[in-house]
Every structure is written in C-alpha cells, then in structure tokens.
Amino acid sequence: MGNNRDLDLSNFSKELKILLILMKEKNHEGVLSNQKEWLEGIDWDRFLQLARHHRVYPFIYTKLKEINETGIPPSVVQTLHREYQKNTFQMLYLSGEMEQTCKLFAENNIRSLQLKGPVLAADLYGDISLRTSRDLDILVPLADLEKAEKLLIEQGYVKDDYFSTKLNEWRWRHHHVAFSHPEKKIKLEIHWRLSPGPAKEPNFNQLWQRKRISPLTSYPVYYLGREDLFFFLVTHGARHGWSRLRWLVDIDQLGKQTLDLKYLKSLFNRFRTLHLAGQAFILASQLLHTPLTEEMRLFIDGDRSRRLAQDAIFYIEEMVNLHTEPLPEYVARYHQRHLFTLMSKQQKLLFMMSLFYPYPVDAETLPLPKNLHFLYFPLRPFLWAWRKTRKHAVL
Picture (spheres, rainbow, N blue to C red):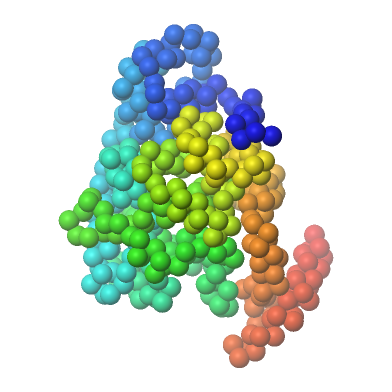
C-alpha cells in the first residue's frame, strides 16, 4: 500500500468539502461559483457550525476576503466577520494576561513556556487574529507546580480539582491542572508534561534549552523551539483524533517554516512516535494539500500511518467534541480503541502495567492511612472486583 494512496473521504458532507476547499493555500477567484454543483443545496447554517466547531472561522473569513467569492451569501460573510472581530479582541486580551502571568512567574523564579495561545498564532500565522484560543496553556517544571498554583490563586484564579491527588499517580497519569478567573473570564492551564503518561517525552530542561522568545510582548515570553513545537502539535492532535481541523492548519503552517527534518525525525524516533508524524503529514497533505518533500515522506510509517490517518477521519466526519461529556457511547468506545492504537509497543506495555497501579477510586473504596497506601497495590484487583459487583447489584 503506497504512502500516497487516497483516504476514504466519501462520507464528507458538501459543507465540509467547501470548508476544506477554502482552507487550502491556493484559492482562485470564483473557485466555488464556477462549479454550480458545489453551491446547490448548501446548508449555510451547517457550514457556519462546522467553521465554529473546527475553530477555523477567522482563517476562513480572511480566505473569503481574498477570493471575493460571490456565490456565498452575504449573511454568512457578515457572521464570520463578527466572529473574526470578536476573536481578535479575545486574542489581544489573552496576550495581556499571558504577559502578566509570565512576568509574575519569572519574578518568583519559575521558568515557563507557552504551549499555544497568542504566541502560537503569531508564530504560525503572523497575525494573532487568524487563530483562535480559548485559554492559556503554560508549561512549568513539576517542582514549581505548587508555587505556580499558589501564585495564581493569589491573583484570583480558582483551581478546578477535576482529579484527586490522594495518590502520587497524578504526577504521570495527568499532565495539567486547570484554573479559571471568575472576574477576568479567563481559563488557564498549568502543564508539567506535554502529554499525559505513561508516554515518554522531552523533559522541561531539554525544552527550555531549545526555547524561543516571542516578539509579541514587551516582557520576555518564551515558547517551544520549532521542532519541539512540531512534536507537541503532532502528539496533541493525534491524542484528540485531529477532531478539529485547526490543528491540521497549524501543521500546514508550521510545515512552511524551516524545520530541521533530520533532527525532527530523530526526536520522533527517540520517543517512538514516528507513526504519529506520518499520520499528521498524510492528513495535512490530503485534506489541505500541504506539499510534502521527499524528507517529509520518510516520516510516513508505511501502512500504519495511513491506517491511523483513516481512523482520524471518523472524528472529522462525526464532528466529535471530546471536551463535551458524557461522550456518546459509540464515540467513547472508538476513542478508547484509537488511543491504544496510537501507542508504540513499549507504550502499550507501560499502559497495561499502569492499570495495576492504584487509582484514587481505590482509596475512595477503601480509605487507608497514608503510611498504608502501599497495600493498594496487592488489593487493587479485589477492590476493582468489589466495585464491579456493587455496580451490577445496583442495576
């Protein structure tokens, strides 16, 4: 099976196909209206819904301005224009808060790296208004996590305790903690890992050595080096099934920059994720017509990368939102299976072993004093069986 074999996109709606046409780099005047069949029976409300879901509405608006497409209703363009303006103000607002937070951390001797947000928009698109961000994502060393949390709480942020810290497994099972500011209406995530465990990844000191400084703010704000950023965007997008096309546009934009592909390949190989880079390149190439050099094609891990790329089409077809819970049962099952197929053999082994490591729910089932927490290891199978028995008894 060749690396260039087309993915099956037969279930894509006409509205989604139009969205993809507009997102591609080269658009020509009348690209849609010259083909009348594209515009017949279009549900423009659905089109707007897709643009919002995939978080590409500011990018789409600027594309429509470039091509001056007469076949699209003025009301659609006006709606996109309003949301484009709203996003611009949001990004400016986030930029100010990002700068203040980085300054606060630096003054308290906490190193920090921006993962996404305004710095990513400025770096990839050259304009913060062209990419959406609903929150700030900041990476800090695990040793400084408690200090960072305390500083944010002092600034009026409220911590979202969505996971328990009764057992130390949170340090590798999770990768960030969320905060919200009730007055500023800002959400902020503090990361101590790029991704949840048990996956391996570059440590903070390595990322810090390769950091860049953003020209966006007057106070120094640091973010990931170009290859580290590509690694993060690929692993993040894969973990979320590439369910938002915005993440593929990021890959398309970053692919236009000068990347050290030899080093980048060694980075993916080191952490056994080359197949994920191949998945990203295939999706970007076939959905957005991202040009792939011969060096880029070497990232494609044969049939495996293509199978993973085809699996990701499900998320785009179904317009899956993984942040809306509870997920439909068929989506939850599919996502659980897909996450497992993304893992390398070593990661699968670590994951299977991690299932035997105690969970907070074990401590809730049988509370024990801290000095006896080691007993949760031999007791875990029995506690799991007890919960299952109780659940069936209730039903």
